[in-house]
Length: 370
Ligand SMILES: Nc1ncnc2c1ncn2[C@@H]1O[C@H](COP(=O)(O)OP(=O)(O)OP(=O)(O)O)[C@@H](O)[C@H]1O
Ligand SMILES: [Mg+2]
Image 1 (tube, rainbow, N blue to C red):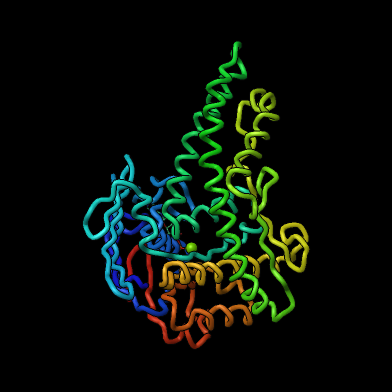
Image 2 (cartoon, rainbow, N blue to C red):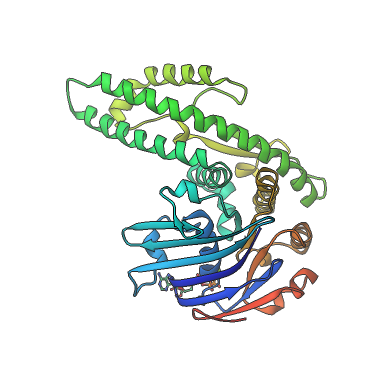
């Protein structure tokens, strides 16, 4: 799939912008703070209804405006699609072919994107939260039902935490109510867990050979999901529920004391191993970077195998971060099959043939000359 046209209205530092793109590579050139990342972000937000760099949607609206709008025309193999996202201070509205969608989970997934930005190094180095967010965003765009489960889980989790907090102070304790929330939490929790196991299994299958390629055969990448309870990919759903329930029983007192839910998918993590060593702990900067890159390239292939279309690739500020070998590896991999956006501060950064042939878009202070 590729995005043909993009229109922005009061999005970050763009008051009005209309652009058309090449279906192969588009290079966005501009000095610092001119709006390159904002443009990449707009494409990402159009697809995901969420930014990759902030969870506060208000930041996306131009400072002097009440609302912001992103519109795009997407070309798929057998159809085209008009997407529209309106962000106001009250919330978001999403439209597909001019029809407003009642749930964002119905909207997300129609347009697929993979973003690779310097922050993605945090995937390996950062907190578990970064890795959970990665799973949620990526799985969400190929499995809308996952997003639904996640929002249901979040709702129960908030209620349960609220109750636990109040139980910390009150006696007698409403344990019957706690039990109801626990059971609801487990119901959604196991569905999330199952999906995450499946997703990471597939991701691992794609990522390992890619990582081997980038490391010239020297490194073997393994991705391991670390749940907060003792279950594995092969544990069946009813057994998972049982294990959750037993665990919740045994930590009940501690949860009441702490006033929060201590186990569940919101506490899980993901580990990466290179040649059986944990990259987060022992990996060099280069190995961590290669791991992040392998994951992103694996995502492209995974999305392709699931939705039968290649996603749109957004490379913000990363080409200059990669050495020549990895840069060529990346560009050769995507060449011709993936619509790609690349940002750079100067044309000097563009040496590879793929980039020389690309469409260039020059950004200056929220305006564009292509
Ligand atoms: N909501 C907003 N309204 C108006 N302007 C904004 C808003 N949010 C950010 N900006 C401005 O947008 C400008 C461009 O930011 P952006 O991150 O896109 O720059 P960039 O071209 O990617 O720069 P760099 O090369 O440093 O990465 C910044 O100067 C920032 O102050
Ligand atoms: Mg930037």
